[in-house]
Amino acid sequence: MDSITQGALGGLCGEWTLRKELGWRAFAWGVLFGTLPDLDVITFPFIDDVQRLSWHRGLSHSIVVMVIASVFFGWLLAKIHRRRGVGFKKAAFFVFITWSSHVAIDCFTTYGTQIYEPFSKYRFASNNMSIIDISFTLPMLLALLIALFLKKSSALRGWVGRAALIWISLYTAASFVMKSKAEEFFRTQLTEQSITPSRMMTAPTLSNIFLWRMLAETEGEYHVAYWSLFDAVDRDLRIDTVEKGHDKLSGFDPYREMQQIKWFTKGWYVGVDHPDDADTVLLVDMRFGELCSTSSKTPVFIWSLKENAEADGGVDFQKVSYRTKVEAKEVIGLLWGRILGKSPSWMDAPWRWEQQSSVGDDTSGANAGADTMTE
Image (tube, rainbow, N blue to C red; front, top):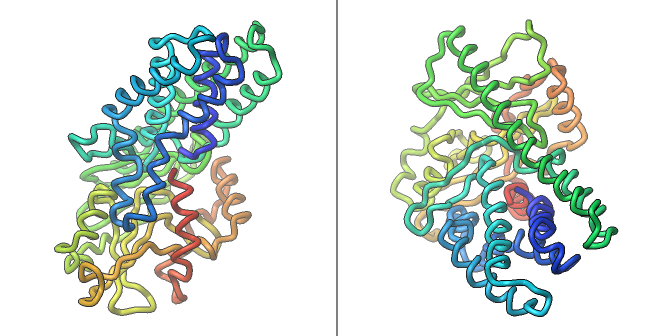
């Protein structure tokens, strides 16, 4: 999830374990260790876009590194604060729950986490929470803010920390319950529409657990649909069908870039012709929800591939962004309406690649925004 959420959760881990010994220092250490796993991004200037796909949320988020970090940093923390009564076992436990909580909530998202590194590159993703979820994060920030103005021995401060823990637990449990209800609904609707998918995935939309997105696969096609807890009983389920277009990408199979993207997307990708360059193919990761407006549906992850004998590895490969052309206010307004069971024009607009306009205008600054969304 985003770094603010990771830091807030880390700060609360400090409150729960070392508040009595360290006071505000426990919060500070928690923020540090809560964000430390994501420092794998400091290597990004030294590796290419393909390597970044497997490096971020890779080894630093693994169970192996989690255990090693707990022992090492626990020993270091106990040494620094031994005069304050911090022993090795308690310090190691603090580092472990802080590090593991970071990894756990990353596992809740669609992006996934390689918890089995270095033995397996499999990305575990339970798809029950959004990468950014204000409803999940704000109560944690509020609890930390209140705690910082109370004495470390305050009983109220302890209750504030417990209340935050209860909220985190209940919200996470609710996300799994909602996911189960969404999956049941989608499976019923697919059956009624005579669609038999070979596989299906569901995930919540941005910053909520009430509006869910379905992605189902059949031979040659993907099917996309949305359902909200607040939808009227008689609201028809709209299912959008997208051709896979994998044949357009078959010529890139020998290249490292293509194999890496196949792994990253878990096979949930679409190949489409670039509207402005006949020699270039766009590859779209279909797992992530679209940014919907009245004029377009904009995917989050898109790459362009073009064979070029003079390029490194024989292929021009780069991330493409449409999002500089998206009106954030309109997107958020439509999303909020759809969560409430409204927005009748939701998904009516064409996909970005279906529009005859220049795409990929921003492949630098916009990409940084895409990376930020997936932290």
